[in-house]
Image (cartoon, rainbow, N blue to C red; front, side, top):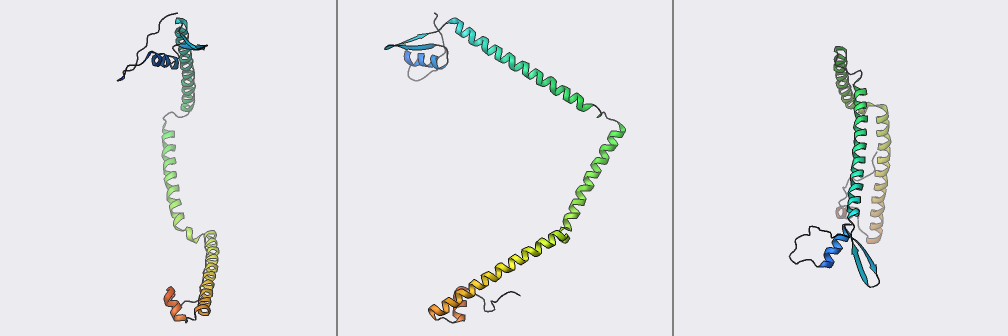
Length: 175
């Protein structure tokens, strides 16, 4: 067995031996075991060596995997470069592609301007107008029902009810 040296954090109050040992156990630098009423602590030099070797193997494995990914990506890049050499034909095709994209954008903008004349959009607007008119009629029915109930319950005339609830004098069903 050997003694383990560790750098201890600087605190205002000195750490007790128990705190130091617990810190070393938490860091896996020292092993501990409770036997009866006693706690035994130990550290073998080979454990630290084994831990470093394990970490080294893990890092080497990560390096190997990263090199394989790098090689794979380089092959993909090389494969992608095939047929993309800068030639006059390629550059003219790229310019044509760019101009076609711009033209498509302009055509989409122009189409959007005339969207309201699209038969599908017009039909959708007609349907939504029908639904809106039905809703207006329902609410108008509700207002007239409340006015009728208020007249019967409190014996108010129409002008007084309209004034109290902010109902215009020309309130009526939509045509």
